[in-house]
Every structure is written in structure tokens, then in C-alpha cells.
Image (cartoon, rainbow, N blue to C red; front, side, top):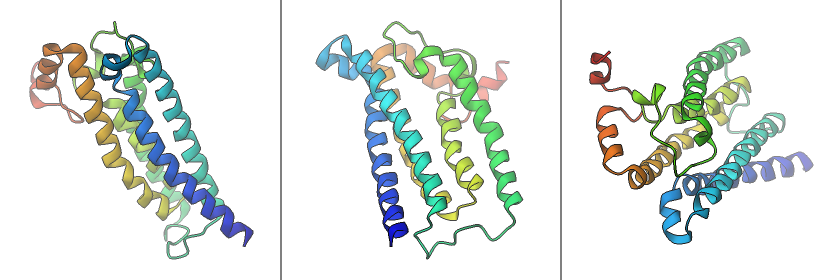
Length: 204
């Protein structure tokens, strides 16, 4: 009975944290819109929103580990039907490109990764090919943990992040358009949202 209560609470925390993370992350990528309401302090406020969202991501990962320890949803098999090494291999296959995209994106975005700045120019590096490399990398993280924990439920639950991360990118692009204006519109024409446009390769 105690284990059942623990897992039920954990599942609720997982779902609620995912919802709250979505709200705070969307708020964090709209500093220019917020600036129109509260002034220059908006960028600092969005930095705090980003910190909260990142912390919630850590909490959700912890709830996934707890789910692995206390298996409540009996209609979901606890493990995949194959040997664990298969899940581990899948996790590695996902991890390699995910971390490449994520670390390259963080490197080329600089401090804007976590702290929005009014004076920051458009990014270079990988951002000359695609507009959201970090989103691609971070999205993969959810399946990395799910397969490392060998959990079918967590893999299915991770599907919610596909539309959520897409929303993150859409709201961020709206704010970047407000920040950079025509320069960003031209930039969007030259780059793909998640996949490079063919013409970007032809120029190299």
C-alpha cells in the first residue's frame, strides 16, 4: 500500500512538473514581449524562468528513476521484452547525435543558452544551418533516460515532449522576430527549423 502511494504521488509529480516546466520555459523565451510590459528587467526575469524550467527538468528525471523503482502501472510491462543490452545500445545511438547537437548549440549560443541578453546578436556556427539544435539534443535526452531505465511507459510518456518542444521553438521564434525584425525573417529563409535547407549546403 505504501509503495502504491509513493508511485501514485510520483506519477502526479511527473505530470504536474511537465506542465509547469512547459509554462515557465515558454515564458523564458519571450523576453522582448515581456519587456513591453515590465521594461528592461524582463530579460533578467526570463533568466530566472529558464532556471526554474531547468530545475523542473531535473525533478522530472528523478521521478522517472523513482518510477523505475516503484512500478505502479501494471498494464504497462515494466521492461522491454528484449535483453537490457539492446535498450542500452538504443540509448547510446540516441545519445551520440543528441549530445553533439546539444553541446554544439550551447557552445555557439554562448551565455544566451541560459541567460537572454538584449544586446546579443544572431548566433553563428551550427545556427547557420538549423535554428534549434539545442531543442533537438534536449528532446533526445528523454528517450536516453527511458531506454537506460528499460521502461516502455517512460518511452511512451516521452512522446509528450515532441509537441511541447515544438511549442518552445515556435514561441521563441516569435520573440526573436520581435527582437531582430527583418534580420531574423531573412535568417529564417536561409535556415531550417530542425533540418538544414538544401541551399545551405550548396553554398559550402
